[in-house]
Image (cartoon, rainbow, N blue to C red; front, side, top):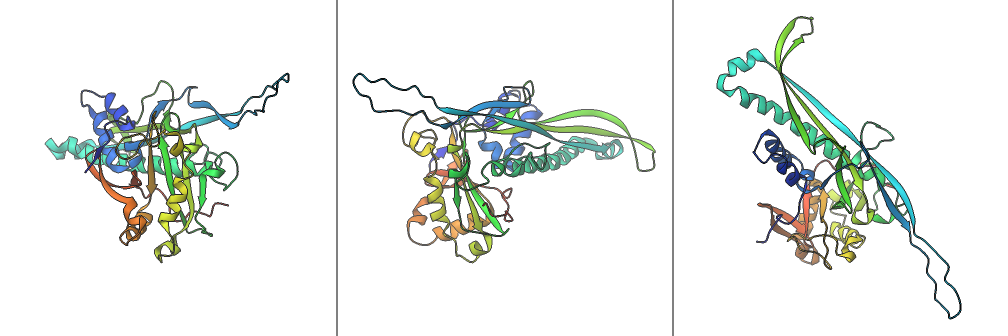
Length: 348
């Protein structure tokens, strides 16, 4: 079985490098990697304008003409639009009564870590859901996620990167191809801040109960500054409008939809992403990895489809990724995440 994951520098690697002594920060990223696949895959970069990250996207190509002797060439230029991606921060505060910690004795730190894991899981889920569904129009304190960008089939910068699964109503789901790279899609954090989730011990604090009477707690603050930047939308594809009821009834050809999504990937032709073995696909110069994200419902349907004979059975294969067995489709790792809903409204 092929082993992969050693050639791609992701957010987890970045976070580990910040804590070479194996301190609590390194422990946090290991826990987060268990809780959310995004941490395992995402590339993290520092924003270039405070809490914002500004970059340009080429939206039109320059015009060219056939030349003739004694005839000049008209100048031209490509069209670019400036994009500003924002960041936000999600927080949590843990208070544990000091008397409870005293009763725990030598297990006090284990008790605090157990409580911390709950906060880490909650924040990881919130961050991952926002990566997919964050919308600064309806919730300005969040950041703009993937679905808010790829929200109209055949329209705008992202329109051609959406495959229509044919569903309607509000019981739909999506499958995402995401290419993690500074050249394509990356997690961003504000300037002069650390990447990833921070856990800060605030020590002993005096607090008041509901009746205004004081007691003491050991307090910890959890904070994660992050945003999402999509520099080149051609590295991502949304397979949208997958009708969940039809899917459960066996009336959706998931393999066919994935195939359509695969051929929408601009990176497929440029050789700018890695397959599951960490090798460049269709050429050299790989700068990232394309990962497929789907929820449990879709993955189970895809697995059932692959149990039969035919091409789908050949495309879905297990491989070892960073010491763990994962399914791959056409050599691309599949990540299972229930941050992708089964209650999406149809993309128009």
